[in-house]
Length: 144
Length: 344
Image (tube, each protein chain N blue to C red):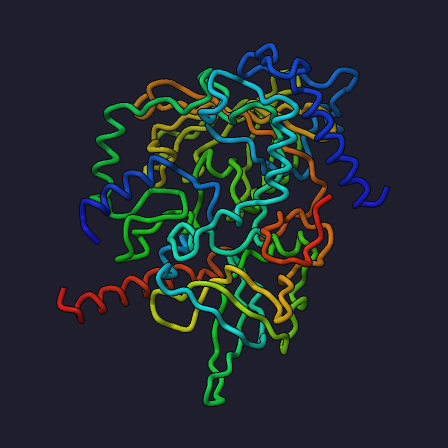
Protein backbone atom coordinates (compact mmCIF):
# COMPACT_ATOMS: atom_id res chain seq x y z
CA UNK A 1 0.00 0.00 0.00
CA UNK A 2 1.14 3.47 -0.79
CA UNK A 3 2.56 4.93 2.44
CA UNK A 4 0.79 8.26 2.22
CA UNK A 5 -2.48 6.53 1.58
CA UNK A 6 -1.86 4.21 4.54
CA UNK A 7 -1.14 7.15 6.82
CA UNK A 8 -4.17 9.04 5.60
CA UNK A 9 -6.36 5.99 6.14
CA UNK A 10 -4.96 5.40 9.61
CA UNK A 11 -5.44 9.04 10.54
CA UNK A 12 -9.00 8.99 9.25
CA UNK A 13 -9.71 5.72 11.04
CA UNK A 14 -8.57 6.91 14.44
CA UNK A 15 -10.42 10.18 14.18
CA UNK A 16 -13.67 8.49 13.25
CA UNK A 17 -13.48 6.11 16.19
CA UNK A 18 -15.76 3.15 16.70
CA UNK A 19 -17.82 2.30 13.70
CA UNK A 20 -21.49 1.72 14.27
CA UNK A 21 -22.29 0.34 10.84
CA UNK A 22 -19.76 -2.41 10.38
CA UNK A 23 -18.79 -5.80 11.70
CA UNK A 24 -16.31 -6.42 14.46
CA UNK A 25 -13.54 -6.73 11.91
CA UNK A 26 -13.05 -5.34 8.44
CA UNK A 27 -14.68 -7.63 5.88
CA UNK A 28 -13.17 -5.39 3.22
CA UNK A 29 -9.70 -6.40 4.41
CA UNK A 30 -10.57 -10.09 4.46
CA UNK A 31 -12.66 -10.49 1.29
CA UNK A 32 -12.15 -9.20 -2.22
CA UNK A 33 -14.72 -6.89 -3.82
CA UNK A 34 -13.33 -7.91 -7.23
CA UNK A 35 -14.01 -11.59 -6.63
CA UNK A 36 -17.74 -12.09 -6.27
CA UNK A 37 -18.63 -15.74 -6.01
CA UNK A 38 -21.82 -17.75 -6.12
CA UNK A 39 -21.76 -21.22 -4.60
CA UNK A 40 -24.37 -23.93 -4.50
CA UNK A 41 -23.62 -26.59 -1.93
CA UNK A 42 -24.79 -28.69 0.96
CA UNK A 43 -24.22 -27.82 4.59
CA UNK A 44 -21.58 -29.97 6.28
CA UNK A 45 -21.51 -28.22 9.63
CA UNK A 46 -22.11 -24.87 11.27
CA UNK A 47 -19.42 -23.46 13.52
CA UNK A 48 -21.48 -21.67 16.14
CA UNK A 49 -18.67 -19.47 17.36
CA UNK A 50 -17.88 -15.84 18.10
CA UNK A 51 -17.11 -13.32 16.84
CA UNK A 52 -18.65 -14.77 13.65
CA UNK A 53 -20.36 -18.01 12.73
CA UNK A 54 -18.98 -20.11 9.86
CA UNK A 55 -21.04 -22.39 7.65
CA UNK A 56 -19.08 -25.21 5.99
CA UNK A 57 -20.51 -26.40 2.69
CA UNK A 58 -19.52 -28.98 0.09
CA UNK A 59 -19.71 -27.70 -3.46
CA UNK A 60 -19.90 -30.22 -6.28
CA UNK A 61 -17.51 -29.57 -9.15
CA UNK A 62 -18.27 -30.29 -12.83
CA UNK A 63 -16.11 -33.43 -12.59
CA UNK A 64 -18.16 -34.71 -9.67
CA UNK A 65 -15.60 -34.05 -6.95
CA UNK A 66 -16.50 -32.06 -3.85
CA UNK A 67 -14.76 -28.93 -2.68
CA UNK A 68 -15.26 -27.65 0.87
CA UNK A 69 -15.96 -23.95 1.38
CA UNK A 70 -16.29 -21.90 4.57
CA UNK A 71 -18.82 -19.08 4.66
CA UNK A 72 -18.55 -16.32 7.24
CA UNK A 73 -21.77 -15.10 8.85
CA UNK A 74 -22.90 -13.02 11.79
CA UNK A 75 -22.51 -13.53 15.50
CA UNK A 76 -24.47 -16.42 17.07
CA UNK A 77 -25.69 -13.91 19.66
CA UNK A 78 -27.81 -12.09 17.08
CA UNK A 79 -29.01 -15.34 15.55
CA UNK A 80 -30.09 -16.63 18.97
CA UNK A 81 -32.08 -13.46 19.57
CA UNK A 82 -33.74 -13.98 16.21
CA UNK A 83 -34.87 -17.42 17.27
CA UNK A 84 -32.21 -19.59 15.64
CA UNK A 85 -30.17 -22.34 17.15
CA UNK A 86 -27.02 -24.23 16.33
CA UNK A 87 -29.05 -26.97 14.63
CA UNK A 88 -31.36 -24.66 12.65
CA UNK A 89 -29.33 -25.36 9.52
CA UNK A 90 -28.85 -29.13 9.58
CA UNK A 91 -26.15 -30.94 7.59
CA UNK A 92 -27.34 -31.90 4.13
CA UNK A 93 -29.35 -28.72 3.61
CA UNK A 94 -28.77 -27.30 0.16
CA UNK A 95 -28.07 -23.58 0.06
CA UNK A 96 -26.89 -20.93 -2.39
CA UNK A 97 -24.31 -18.44 -1.25
CA UNK A 98 -23.70 -15.07 -2.83
CA UNK A 99 -20.62 -13.41 -1.46
CA UNK A 100 -17.06 -12.35 -2.05
CA UNK A 101 -14.08 -14.65 -2.05
CA UNK A 102 -11.29 -14.40 0.55
CA UNK A 103 -8.29 -12.33 -0.52
CA UNK A 104 -5.90 -15.11 0.49
CA UNK A 105 -7.31 -17.36 -2.24
CA UNK A 106 -8.51 -20.08 0.12
CA UNK A 107 -12.01 -21.45 -0.20
CA UNK A 108 -13.65 -18.93 2.07
CA UNK A 109 -16.30 -16.34 1.34
CA UNK A 110 -18.61 -14.06 3.25
CA UNK A 111 -22.27 -14.95 3.21
CA UNK A 112 -23.62 -11.73 1.77
CA UNK A 113 -26.82 -13.48 0.76
CA UNK A 114 -27.85 -16.98 1.63
CA UNK A 115 -30.87 -18.52 -0.05
CA UNK A 116 -32.45 -21.89 -0.53
CA UNK A 117 -32.56 -23.22 -4.10
CA UNK A 118 -36.24 -22.19 -4.38
CA UNK A 119 -35.31 -18.57 -3.75
CA UNK A 120 -36.42 -18.27 -0.15
CA UNK A 121 -33.94 -16.38 1.92
CA UNK A 122 -32.25 -18.40 4.61
CA UNK A 123 -33.48 -17.68 8.12
CA UNK A 124 -36.67 -16.03 6.97
CA UNK A 125 -39.61 -17.58 8.73
CA UNK A 126 -37.99 -17.38 12.11
CA UNK A 127 -40.78 -15.25 13.38
CA UNK A 128 -40.33 -12.35 15.71
CA UNK A 129 -37.19 -11.08 14.07
CA UNK A 130 -36.67 -7.39 13.91
CA UNK A 131 -34.62 -7.79 10.75
CA UNK A 132 -35.51 -5.37 7.99
CA UNK A 133 -36.59 -6.56 4.57
CA UNK A 134 -33.96 -6.35 1.93
CA UNK A 135 -36.28 -6.91 -1.00
CA UNK A 136 -34.44 -10.00 -2.15
CA UNK A 137 -36.94 -12.63 -1.12
CA UNK A 138 -40.34 -12.32 -2.77
CA UNK A 139 -41.88 -14.67 -0.21
CA UNK A 140 -40.76 -12.56 2.70
CA UNK A 141 -43.79 -11.39 4.66
CA UNK A 142 -44.38 -7.66 4.92
CA UNK A 143 -43.53 -6.07 8.21
CA UNK A 144 -46.59 -5.12 10.24
CA UNK B 1 -46.76 -12.26 33.05
CA UNK B 2 -44.64 -14.48 30.87
CA UNK B 3 -41.28 -13.23 29.66
CA UNK B 4 -42.34 -12.48 26.10
CA UNK B 5 -45.38 -10.49 27.19
CA UNK B 6 -43.17 -8.67 29.65
CA UNK B 7 -40.79 -7.72 26.84
CA UNK B 8 -43.63 -6.50 24.66
CA UNK B 9 -45.00 -4.45 27.55
CA UNK B 10 -41.59 -2.94 28.20
CA UNK B 11 -41.02 -2.15 24.55
CA UNK B 12 -44.47 -0.60 24.20
CA UNK B 13 -43.95 1.47 27.33
CA UNK B 14 -40.59 2.66 26.04
CA UNK B 15 -41.86 3.66 22.61
CA UNK B 16 -44.85 5.40 24.16
CA UNK B 17 -42.53 7.24 26.50
CA UNK B 18 -40.28 8.25 23.61
CA UNK B 19 -43.13 9.49 21.45
CA UNK B 20 -44.59 11.37 24.39
CA UNK B 21 -41.30 13.28 24.59
CA UNK B 22 -41.59 14.37 20.98
CA UNK B 23 -42.88 17.92 20.89
CA UNK B 24 -46.59 18.15 20.20
CA UNK B 25 -46.30 21.10 17.85
CA UNK B 26 -44.97 19.13 14.96
CA UNK B 27 -42.54 21.57 13.42
CA UNK B 28 -41.24 23.28 16.54
CA UNK B 29 -38.51 22.05 18.79
CA UNK B 30 -39.37 21.11 22.36
CA UNK B 31 -38.22 23.42 25.12
CA UNK B 32 -34.59 22.42 25.31
CA UNK B 33 -33.72 20.39 28.35
CA UNK B 34 -30.37 21.57 29.63
CA UNK B 35 -27.67 19.07 28.75
CA UNK B 36 -27.05 16.92 31.79
CA UNK B 37 -30.40 17.46 33.43
CA UNK B 38 -32.99 14.74 33.34
CA UNK B 39 -36.50 14.43 34.65
CA UNK B 40 -38.03 11.09 35.49
CA UNK B 41 -41.59 10.33 34.48
CA UNK B 42 -44.20 11.95 36.70
CA UNK B 43 -46.03 9.74 39.18
CA UNK B 44 -43.26 7.19 39.14
CA UNK B 45 -41.06 6.49 42.13
CA UNK B 46 -37.71 4.97 41.22
CA UNK B 47 -37.18 1.70 43.07
CA UNK B 48 -34.49 1.29 45.71
CA UNK B 49 -32.29 -1.63 46.54
CA UNK B 50 -32.86 -3.32 49.93
CA UNK B 51 -29.86 -1.34 51.22
CA UNK B 52 -31.41 1.94 50.12
CA UNK B 53 -29.60 2.95 46.91
CA UNK B 54 -31.44 3.76 43.67
CA UNK B 55 -31.96 0.49 41.81
CA UNK B 56 -30.70 0.53 38.21
CA UNK B 57 -30.52 -3.24 37.84
CA UNK B 58 -31.66 -4.94 34.68
CA UNK B 59 -30.63 -5.85 31.15
CA UNK B 60 -30.57 -2.98 28.72
CA UNK B 61 -29.96 -2.34 25.04
CA UNK B 62 -28.66 0.94 23.63
CA UNK B 63 -29.26 0.11 19.96
CA UNK B 64 -30.78 3.00 18.13
CA UNK B 65 -31.12 4.64 14.75
CA UNK B 66 -30.83 8.11 16.24
CA UNK B 67 -27.84 9.62 14.40
CA UNK B 68 -24.61 10.07 16.33
CA UNK B 69 -24.11 13.62 15.06
CA UNK B 70 -26.88 15.89 13.80
CA UNK B 71 -27.49 15.43 10.08
CA UNK B 72 -27.37 18.50 7.85
CA UNK B 73 -31.05 18.20 6.94
CA UNK B 74 -32.11 18.92 10.54
CA UNK B 75 -29.43 21.49 11.26
CA UNK B 76 -30.45 23.89 14.02
CA UNK B 77 -33.17 21.60 15.31
CA UNK B 78 -32.80 19.55 18.49
CA UNK B 79 -35.77 17.20 18.11
CA UNK B 80 -37.37 15.17 15.38
CA UNK B 81 -41.10 15.62 14.96
CA UNK B 82 -43.34 12.70 15.71
CA UNK B 83 -43.93 12.23 11.98
CA UNK B 84 -40.19 12.17 11.29
CA UNK B 85 -39.62 9.59 14.02
CA UNK B 86 -42.27 7.37 12.53
CA UNK B 87 -40.89 7.81 9.01
CA UNK B 88 -37.34 7.00 10.12
CA UNK B 89 -38.51 3.85 11.89
CA UNK B 90 -40.62 2.78 8.95
CA UNK B 91 -37.67 3.17 6.62
CA UNK B 92 -35.36 1.24 8.94
CA UNK B 93 -37.86 -1.59 9.31
CA UNK B 94 -38.77 -1.87 5.67
CA UNK B 95 -35.52 -1.43 3.85
CA UNK B 96 -32.60 -1.64 6.23
CA UNK B 97 -29.26 -1.21 4.60
CA UNK B 98 -29.43 -3.84 1.92
CA UNK B 99 -31.35 -2.28 -0.91
CA UNK B 100 -28.85 0.44 -1.64
CA UNK B 101 -25.81 -1.81 -1.68
CA UNK B 102 -23.85 -1.75 -4.90
CA UNK B 103 -22.32 -5.06 -5.85
CA UNK B 104 -18.60 -5.34 -6.49
CA UNK B 105 -17.70 -2.45 -4.20
CA UNK B 106 -15.59 -2.46 -1.06
CA UNK B 107 -18.52 -0.79 0.70
CA UNK B 108 -20.65 -3.80 -0.15
CA UNK B 109 -18.03 -6.21 1.19
CA UNK B 110 -17.73 -4.17 4.38
CA UNK B 111 -21.45 -4.59 4.99
CA UNK B 112 -20.49 -8.26 5.27
CA UNK B 113 -23.86 -10.02 5.12
CA UNK B 114 -27.48 -9.12 4.76
CA UNK B 115 -29.49 -7.39 7.41
CA UNK B 116 -30.74 -10.49 9.13
CA UNK B 117 -27.34 -11.01 10.68
CA UNK B 118 -27.24 -7.57 12.20
CA UNK B 119 -28.91 -6.16 15.28
CA UNK B 120 -28.61 -2.47 14.59
CA UNK B 121 -31.98 -1.48 15.86
CA UNK B 122 -34.90 -0.08 13.97
CA UNK B 123 -36.17 2.40 16.53
CA UNK B 124 -35.47 6.04 17.17
CA UNK B 125 -34.92 5.57 20.89
CA UNK B 126 -34.29 9.25 21.43
CA UNK B 127 -36.38 11.86 19.60
CA UNK B 128 -33.31 14.06 19.49
CA UNK B 129 -31.72 14.59 16.11
CA UNK B 130 -28.34 13.43 17.44
CA UNK B 131 -26.82 11.47 20.28
CA UNK B 132 -24.43 14.40 20.71
CA UNK B 133 -26.49 16.77 22.89
CA UNK B 134 -23.77 19.25 23.73
CA UNK B 135 -22.43 21.39 22.05
CA UNK B 136 -25.86 22.63 20.99
CA UNK B 137 -25.12 22.07 17.29
CA UNK B 138 -25.12 18.31 17.93
CA UNK B 139 -21.65 17.88 16.43
CA UNK B 140 -18.40 16.62 17.93
CA UNK B 141 -16.19 19.64 18.58
CA UNK B 142 -13.16 20.30 16.42
CA UNK B 143 -9.86 18.65 17.25
CA UNK B 144 -6.96 20.63 18.63
CA UNK B 145 -3.89 21.17 16.44
CA UNK B 146 -2.02 18.86 18.79
CA UNK B 147 -4.51 16.06 18.14
CA UNK B 148 -4.21 16.51 14.39
CA UNK B 149 -0.45 16.33 14.65
CA UNK B 150 -0.71 13.12 16.72
CA UNK B 151 -3.03 11.56 14.14
CA UNK B 152 -0.55 12.31 11.36
CA UNK B 153 2.17 10.51 13.33
CA UNK B 154 0.04 7.56 14.26
CA UNK B 155 1.70 5.24 11.76
CA UNK B 156 5.02 5.50 13.65
CA UNK B 157 3.57 3.82 16.71
CA UNK B 158 4.33 0.14 17.38
CA UNK B 159 0.62 -0.75 17.35
CA UNK B 160 -2.46 0.73 15.77
CA UNK B 161 -4.63 2.41 18.40
CA UNK B 162 -7.92 2.75 16.55
CA UNK B 163 -10.94 1.01 18.07
CA UNK B 164 -13.18 0.66 15.00
CA UNK B 165 -13.34 -2.20 12.51
CA UNK B 166 -10.30 -1.14 10.57
CA UNK B 167 -6.52 -0.96 10.53
CA UNK B 168 -3.54 0.86 9.12
CA UNK B 169 -2.44 -2.07 6.93
CA UNK B 170 -1.87 -5.74 7.71
CA UNK B 171 1.84 -6.41 8.17
CA UNK B 172 1.07 -7.73 11.63
CA UNK B 173 -1.95 -8.07 13.89
CA UNK B 174 -0.65 -4.94 15.61
CA UNK B 175 -1.68 -3.02 12.50
CA UNK B 176 -5.30 -3.87 13.20
CA UNK B 177 -7.65 -2.10 15.61
CA UNK B 178 -8.09 -3.05 19.25
CA UNK B 179 -11.66 -4.04 18.31
CA UNK B 180 -10.44 -6.46 15.63
CA UNK B 181 -7.87 -7.79 18.10
CA UNK B 182 -10.77 -8.55 20.45
CA UNK B 183 -9.31 -6.36 23.18
CA UNK B 184 -11.66 -3.44 23.63
CA UNK B 185 -13.64 -0.70 21.92
CA UNK B 186 -12.20 1.62 24.56
CA UNK B 187 -14.26 4.16 26.45
CA UNK B 188 -16.81 5.48 25.87
CA UNK B 189 -16.81 3.23 22.76
CA UNK B 190 -17.76 0.25 24.92
CA UNK B 191 -20.84 2.16 26.14
CA UNK B 192 -21.84 3.27 22.63
CA UNK B 193 -24.16 1.46 20.22
CA UNK B 194 -22.70 -0.72 17.49
CA UNK B 195 -24.19 -2.96 14.80
CA UNK B 196 -24.95 -5.82 17.21
CA UNK B 197 -24.34 -7.03 20.78
CA UNK B 198 -25.67 -3.75 22.13
CA UNK B 199 -26.57 -5.31 25.44
CA UNK B 200 -25.62 -4.44 29.00
CA UNK B 201 -26.50 -5.93 32.37
CA UNK B 202 -26.39 -3.71 35.42
CA UNK B 203 -26.08 -5.36 38.84
CA UNK B 204 -25.59 -3.76 42.23
CA UNK B 205 -24.30 -4.65 45.65
CA UNK B 206 -23.86 -2.35 48.63
CA UNK B 207 -21.27 0.20 47.53
CA UNK B 208 -20.77 -1.24 44.04
CA UNK B 209 -22.35 -1.11 40.60
CA UNK B 210 -21.40 -3.68 37.96
CA UNK B 211 -21.95 -3.11 34.24
CA UNK B 212 -21.51 -6.22 32.12
CA UNK B 213 -20.90 -5.39 28.46
CA UNK B 214 -21.87 -7.94 25.80
CA UNK B 215 -19.73 -6.64 22.91
CA UNK B 216 -16.25 -8.09 23.49
CA UNK B 217 -17.31 -9.05 27.03
CA UNK B 218 -16.05 -7.68 30.31
CA UNK B 219 -17.62 -6.07 33.35
CA UNK B 220 -16.99 -2.62 34.74
CA UNK B 221 -16.95 -2.74 38.54
CA UNK B 222 -17.63 0.74 39.88
CA UNK B 223 -17.23 1.46 43.60
CA UNK B 224 -19.64 4.05 45.02
CA UNK B 225 -18.13 4.23 48.50
CA UNK B 226 -16.42 7.56 48.03
CA UNK B 227 -12.92 6.28 47.38
CA UNK B 228 -10.43 8.25 45.30
CA UNK B 229 -9.02 7.22 41.92
CA UNK B 230 -6.06 4.86 41.85
CA UNK B 231 -2.61 6.43 41.53
CA UNK B 232 -1.96 8.31 38.31
CA UNK B 233 0.88 5.97 37.29
CA UNK B 234 -1.57 3.06 37.02
CA UNK B 235 -3.18 3.01 33.57
CA UNK B 236 -5.98 0.72 32.38
CA UNK B 237 -7.63 -0.01 29.03
CA UNK B 238 -11.05 0.89 30.48
CA UNK B 239 -9.67 3.52 32.84
CA UNK B 240 -10.44 3.70 36.54
CA UNK B 241 -14.06 4.42 37.45
CA UNK B 242 -15.37 5.72 40.77
CA UNK B 243 -19.03 6.52 41.33
CA UNK B 244 -21.37 8.30 43.68
CA UNK B 245 -25.11 8.95 43.88
CA UNK B 246 -26.64 12.35 43.26
CA UNK B 247 -30.29 11.88 44.16
CA UNK B 248 -31.46 9.07 41.90
CA UNK B 249 -28.57 9.50 39.47
CA UNK B 250 -25.41 7.39 39.44
CA UNK B 251 -22.47 9.62 38.55
CA UNK B 252 -19.30 7.86 37.41
CA UNK B 253 -15.95 9.59 36.96
CA UNK B 254 -13.36 7.75 34.88
CA UNK B 255 -9.68 8.62 34.41
CA UNK B 256 -6.36 6.72 34.28
CA UNK B 257 -6.69 5.55 30.68
CA UNK B 258 -3.79 3.99 28.80
CA UNK B 259 -2.17 5.41 25.70
CA UNK B 260 -2.96 2.16 23.82
CA UNK B 261 -6.45 2.84 22.52
CA UNK B 262 -8.08 5.90 21.03
CA UNK B 263 -11.49 7.44 21.18
CA UNK B 264 -11.69 9.95 18.30
CA UNK B 265 -8.04 10.76 18.81
CA UNK B 266 -8.10 10.89 22.63
CA UNK B 267 -6.25 8.38 24.80
CA UNK B 268 -4.47 8.70 28.14
CA UNK B 269 -5.76 12.20 28.88
CA UNK B 270 -9.38 11.23 28.46
CA UNK B 271 -11.66 12.11 31.36
CA UNK B 272 -15.27 10.91 31.36
CA UNK B 273 -18.24 11.76 33.55
CA UNK B 274 -21.19 9.43 33.05
CA UNK B 275 -24.67 9.91 34.48
CA UNK B 276 -27.23 7.08 34.75
CA UNK B 277 -30.80 8.07 35.64
CA UNK B 278 -33.84 5.81 35.50
CA UNK B 279 -36.63 7.60 33.70
CA UNK B 280 -39.20 4.89 34.36
CA UNK B 281 -39.40 1.11 34.53
CA UNK B 282 -38.25 0.75 30.95
CA UNK B 283 -35.38 3.17 30.41
CA UNK B 284 -32.20 4.67 31.76
CA UNK B 285 -31.08 8.05 30.51
CA UNK B 286 -27.36 7.59 29.99
CA UNK B 287 -25.14 10.60 29.45
CA UNK B 288 -21.43 10.80 29.10
CA UNK B 289 -19.38 13.96 28.99
CA UNK B 290 -16.07 13.55 27.20
CA UNK B 291 -13.20 15.80 28.18
CA UNK B 292 -9.63 16.01 26.94
CA UNK B 293 -8.28 19.49 26.33
CA UNK B 294 -5.27 18.02 24.49
CA UNK B 295 -7.62 16.52 21.88
CA UNK B 296 -10.94 18.39 21.73
CA UNK B 297 -11.44 22.14 21.57
CA UNK B 298 -14.22 21.77 24.14
CA UNK B 299 -15.95 18.98 26.13
CA UNK B 300 -18.94 17.27 24.57
CA UNK B 301 -21.81 15.16 25.84
CA UNK B 302 -23.66 12.17 24.42
CA UNK B 303 -27.14 11.12 25.58
CA UNK B 304 -27.91 7.49 24.74
CA UNK B 305 -31.10 5.81 25.96
CA UNK B 306 -30.59 2.41 27.58
CA UNK B 307 -33.86 0.55 27.07
CA UNK B 308 -34.75 -2.30 29.43
CA UNK B 309 -35.14 -5.45 27.34
CA UNK B 310 -35.45 -8.19 29.95
CA UNK B 311 -33.38 -10.29 27.55
CA UNK B 312 -30.59 -12.69 28.32
CA UNK B 313 -26.96 -11.73 27.83
CA UNK B 314 -24.77 -14.01 25.73
CA UNK B 315 -21.06 -14.56 25.91
CA UNK B 316 -19.04 -13.08 23.05
CA UNK B 317 -15.79 -15.03 23.25
CA UNK B 318 -14.33 -12.88 20.51
CA UNK B 319 -10.81 -14.25 20.23
CA UNK B 320 -11.91 -17.87 20.28
CA UNK B 321 -13.12 -17.91 16.70
CA UNK B 322 -11.42 -14.85 15.28
CA UNK B 323 -10.58 -16.46 11.93
CA UNK B 324 -11.13 -13.01 10.43
CA UNK B 325 -7.80 -11.79 11.79
CA UNK B 326 -5.92 -14.71 10.18
CA UNK B 327 -7.85 -14.08 6.95
CA UNK B 328 -6.91 -10.40 6.88
CA UNK B 329 -3.19 -11.13 7.42
CA UNK B 330 -3.04 -14.02 4.95
CA UNK B 331 -4.98 -11.93 2.42
CA UNK B 332 -2.31 -9.23 2.67
CA UNK B 333 0.49 -11.81 2.21
CA UNK B 334 -1.25 -13.13 -0.88
CA UNK B 335 -1.52 -9.61 -2.26
CA UNK B 336 2.24 -9.17 -1.69
CA UNK B 337 3.03 -12.42 -3.49
CA UNK B 338 0.82 -11.39 -6.37
CA UNK B 339 2.51 -7.97 -6.56
CA UNK B 340 5.99 -9.57 -6.50
CA UNK B 341 4.96 -12.06 -9.18
CA UNK B 342 3.76 -9.32 -11.49
CA UNK B 343 7.10 -7.54 -11.16
CA UNK B 344 5.72 -4.49 -9.38
